[in-house]
Every structure is written in C-alpha cells, then in structure tokens.
Image (cartoon, rainbow over all chains, first blue to last red; front, side, top):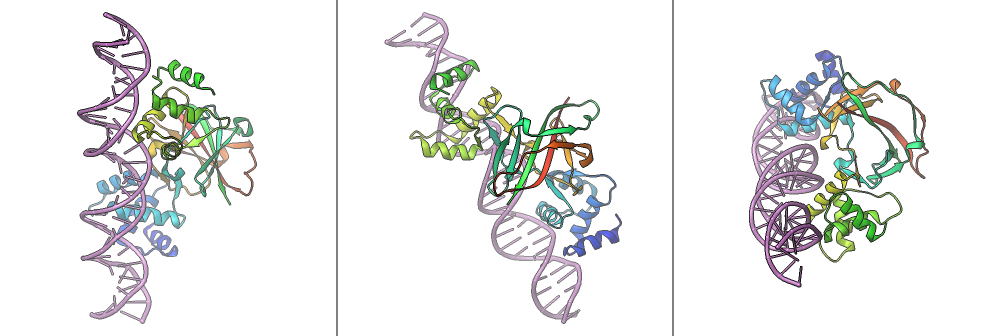
Length: 135
Length: 135
DNA sequence: TTTTCACTTTAGAATAATTATAAACTAGAA
DNA sequence: TTCTAGTTTATAATTATTCTAAAGTGAAAA
C-alpha cells in the first residue's frame, strides 16, 4: 500500500492523517503479509524503526481507531480476563460478550472436517472453538 | 461431590487440605453443572457465601494449584495479551504458546461440519478456531 | 499429646497492561 | 493567517495478577 493510499484510507474513515497516524499506518499497512502484534511489540518496533518518538498512549489510541474503522481486527479479548472452567474435558465454548459469559459446548456438538497441518516442527496440542454471540 | 471426596481429591494430588482450600474446593466442585469463573468473580462469590474471609492471594494460589493438579482448566490466555491482526477477514489462528505467536489460518483451510444452535435469544456473530501448538 | 517444620496463608508491595486526564499541539476549514 | 475541534502527550489512575516475607498450621515423628 502506497503513501497516497494510506492517506486515503485514513481520510475515508474520518481519521485525520496526523504525522503519528501516518507513520503507524505506513508501518502496519505497507506490507504484503498479515502482521500480528500487540501494542507493546508495535511500540518497540516503531521506536526502533523511527527517529521521532510516538507516545505509547498514541499507539493505543491509533490502534483502537484503526480497529474501529475496520482496518485492524482484534483477536481474543474475553474482556481481558482469564477464565477458568471446572469442566476439564476437551470441549468448546460460546462466548457472550454482552454478559462476559462463557457457555460450554460439548466436544461432540462440533465436528471439524478439515484442519490444516501444524507448522514445521510443531504439533497440534488441541483445538479450541469459540462461537462468539450477539443479541 | 461429597466432603470426603473433596479431601481425597486434594490429598491425592498432593495438596494439603487446609481450611481455605477445602472451602474453595467445596464451592467449586460440589455442584452438578460446569462452572465458569474468574478469580475476581470467585472471590466475590466466596466473600458473599462464607463467614471467614479468604485472601485474594490465597484464591489465586488455590485456583492455580487446582489447575496444576488437573482439577480446573484454563480457558484462553494468549499470555494475557490482546493481539491485533492486520488481516480483517474472517479467518482462524494457530497459537504457539512457546513463542506467544499467532499464525493465520485461511478460513478455507478449516471446515466445520457440525455446529450447535446459539442459546435462546442469541445469534452467532462469528466462529473462531484456535489450534494450540506444542513442540 | 506435644513438638517440629515444610507447606500455606496473608496483607500489602510490586508489576504489567491498559485507560483516563488535562494541558499543549496541529490539520485544515474559513 | 486565524481559529477550533480533533490529537498527542506525559503522567496519574486503574485493573489484574504476582511477589514477598512474616505469621500460621497440617500432619509426621517423637
């Protein structure tokens, strides 16, 4: 993605293309392959790469703005809490973000027909399915 | 599960059945249905239910001990970080807890044949599959 | 039964991730 | 150029969790 497109992308989603946002957006979107990151890792990478320091709060703000605009998706939040489950057997979950509630799904109620091979040198430990709910 | 079994459960996994552990274990395991909780919610419930106050640190310790003994399973951690993804299309993930790394899986590489109905009044927003990896 | 001590519990400090605050800054319309 | 709503920033606050070190306690041994 070229700089002009970055500007368009920002403007078209109502985000003023500030120096910081453009810099972050270029870093994120000027690449071929999917990129996974946490705010922390992004902050480190940007600090390393660029001369001008962008504050951590701005990185949080920008990432959330990009997400709100649909340019980033968030993987796994569960309200940022760690849930425990008295059911120790292999099973799956509904997750209701309205109520922050987990509901069990019996392993037999989900059948996965096709599954990719694990990356080189790795094995599959287990498969967890989350069905996210809405009202 | 009866009190005698609670004591057995603790002892057989090398956990001394202290007053606090027994109280927590009774609360967790003397029930028919699966129970989901966070440390915070468990703390609140225990505070409400019981007369003697158990410290939050003890609840953390106990829950982790129960987990280590296989009496509880933990749902979703991702190293307690929130990951973002530049891939906003619907897709799935490998998660490598060794390296805390997420790897994309194309939506077409996983086929789910059978899926349960959403609970009453709820709809399915999306389905996320996590394939957890080991070495 | 009493003694002993490794295992536990506890309050409170420390850490880590994230969000809030409020003052200074700035893109871009007028 | 001026003006202002939208942004950035340092820092404080918040939240979840872990650490620490002192006090407490099961239960094995005497």
